[in-house]
Length: 245
Ligand code: G3P
Ligand code: CA
Image 1 (cartoon, rainbow, N blue to C red):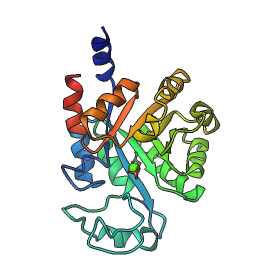
Image 2: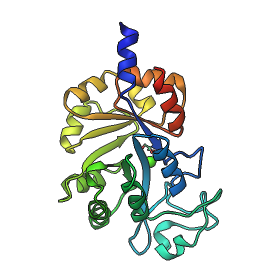
Image 3: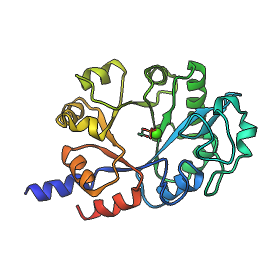
Image 4: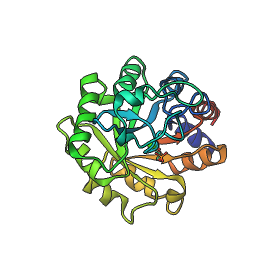
């Protein structure tokens, strides 16, 4: 019985492609995000930074150095300058609008991490672009930055919001209520300190995402805790694994 219920549970655990499918194409490029979506990921996770002229672009780091042929801080480069860079391994640095256009015609949902701190106006501008694209209902905005989370939760665009945590809060449900969260997005190791927090959050109507989980034994552990979503660099392998568990 326990095996059956575990299998039934696991088949519902969302596959979330971390920065797309970075083993297939360079992280956070359109090719990576589309690879995750087209191979069946339920969600695509991606990172937003803002250029010197206030445009949201898709990159994890605060600088372009690791991922491109350029150098410098994103907030010291214009959107035009960033558009001319080539990503190592192929592709370009997408704008948020390019990502929204791509996902709009696909079925995957968007787990949109906004790197902070950011001004309220910057957060509002990014959320407005999401709303104007028609993707608002399929988007969950997340951040480690409490200010970004507060701004996103208060936005007139009424998008769902998650807080990213490296460690569990003493009372995650209280934190979720304080920040009006739809979801709580926690590090695997952090959650392993007290996996029963998943049940408490779910009982309060809060979804739980765990990151960044790339190995089968960790997928097994995370799904046995009952998490709603597994954020992974290997979404297609997770989908394969999920089929048989
Ligand atoms: O979505 C979770 C994960 O992306 C948070 O960490 O550093 O990969 O953005 P990081
Ligand atoms: Ca991220």
